[in-house]
Length: 199
Ligand code: 5GP
Image 1 (cartoon, protein in one colour):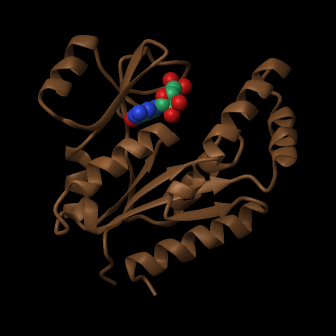
Image 2 (cartoon, protein in one colour):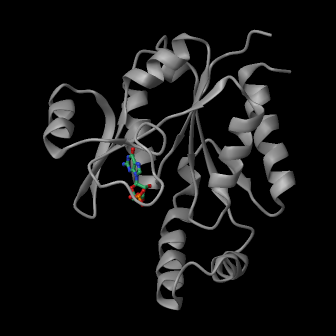
């Protein structure tokens, strides 16, 4: 079935299950590709070039900025991060949808970039942004504590960041609450199916 290629931008505070939901979508939908960001930070642990990130030198990254290769870029903790335009355009042209996983500030820049495009541009025609919400701050706290990966101070910091991000959830076209993973996933699929004309 021919479907409309979507440019799906997803944001969520950490602990809301965004990575799991995106992984589930990528497993189920062979015609959705994940937008791999560029960064100048060093790979960590098992991270692979071209899988987790496109790892670049500062010089190369700055060349790419000068070439206008990014739809958005930012400096986070002294490192550059950015989203390349070309792979998104190519995927959409081939009829695939693209998922971009990005924080609220990055999403705002992408939205601004897309808004300035002509209506006929596939990135604009297929644009949709979705914010994943936790059921409550208490539930988010207990998930972050349960994860066991952060110190109590780091959990508090993440919760503080989450509040700031959730305050901007209204900027998104759609919000999906991750109360139950299976149900949240279903809602996400229904949304994507409806917008891409899959049903
Ligand atoms: P990390 O180094 O832990 O993988 O990511 C650090 C931060 O960079 C995270 O907040 C992440 O959302 C952000 N980030 C990752 N990729 C991009 C990107 O393409 N653009 C922007 N603006 N931020 C990104």
